[in-house]
Length: 218
Image (cartoon, rainbow, N blue to C red; front, side, top):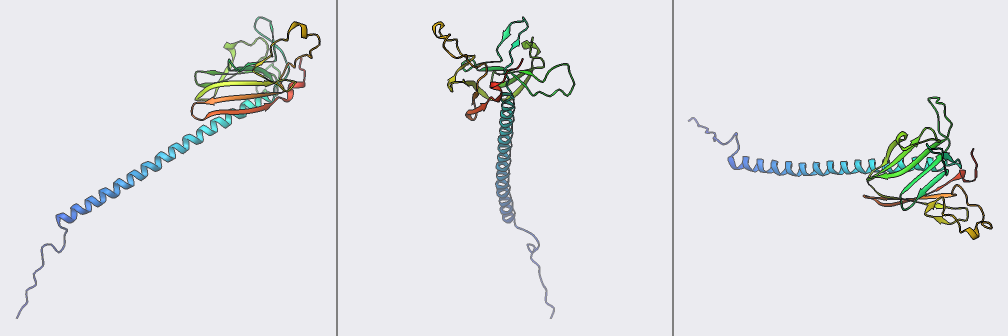
């Protein structure tokens, strides 16, 4: 007697319910994976921005340190021939300008190793200005470089020869009655404190020694 084997029509496929369940599971997995990937990418972007910001701050501070630690006592003349101090600065006005040495001359220009340098705030940017020639320098001839961004305020303090901190340099003149017996003020401070208030990181304070404070340059 011959047996007849009948195959079910559902043996080689999925039911509609099974397909819907599979699609739902795939959608959930894709959503979780997409959210995780987004988080990873955002974390990477934040880390890169933080690294770039740190690099900018470190580079800026290194340049400032290199300039200040090369300050020399060399007065200059402006475009009108008037004599200016080797260094001028103010905490309230947020600027400093000085003469430094040790500048290389790769182009072999007819100039010395001295340079006039200034630091100031323009909007929210810390600007470094530099002049190739120390005498007769005017603002229009300065080379400007943006060192640090997102800056709120910039202040300087100056350590005089009596170990006192001054908010302005040169220091204010003494009373007329005290000028004869008072020691001559130092033309260059022994140290300079920088106070930089950043919008994103708050206040940063750095203290720089001025090795050239006791030297006299003609």
